[in-house]
View (cartoon, helix red, strand yellow):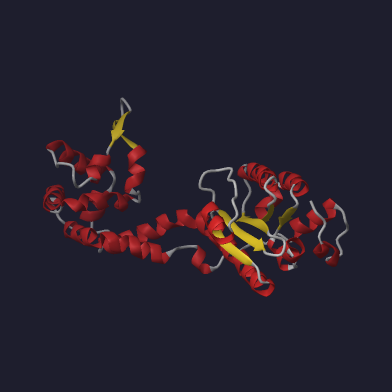
Length: 310
């Protein structure tokens, strides 16, 4: 850990424990706005791609001889097969490695990916399997009992539910947006260049600097170039609202990354936040001591980037 002027301004002693205590006490409890919960643009895009096929399925709603009608529909419009998985909230690509049990007594299972491939010939065996899927998944009852009025609207709701799985990615994006807002203003004020989502290629093209990577295709959240020093700073960000065993290994990974970059004359600035760190303070403190620069949002707002980069 390096003692920064900002710490002095905040009247923090030149003591690692005192500074770390401030970092923990100023962790933010939220970085979320209302658009964090659902990415509606993505939902609408996904529905638009299969809207025609979903509308075709509407003809099955309320039909008596629904199994026969299903096979008739699929025979006439094979592409309907590819949208069936979304009705039970699963992506087609997830089915590749998922086997379904046919015989519950013997627990025999096999891949059913061909059921939903329109290019595969609709054999009598596949027809039987499709009807079995329709019945056992519960879809037959949903259609026959008119529990839904529009398959498009139903699948819109399914997509909203499935999109919640992407919240982890949006957490990272929210943190990056907050930090970039600060970096952008800081760079403009001090005539600095920076690259968001910095790759080895982008850094080479913009600054003619060859950076070695510890992982193939690694993308850094930000890279900042200070021209007078001819020096690059790598900035990594993340946010953890909850605890977990992963945090311990995460802290260790940033020790390694700091050492790896330092051998190339590059400083790593790790900006991390979230109350999850309160459950793993020991691991974070070890990295705080080991790395030169470990900050949270509050410390960045207080001016630590100026101390480090300028």
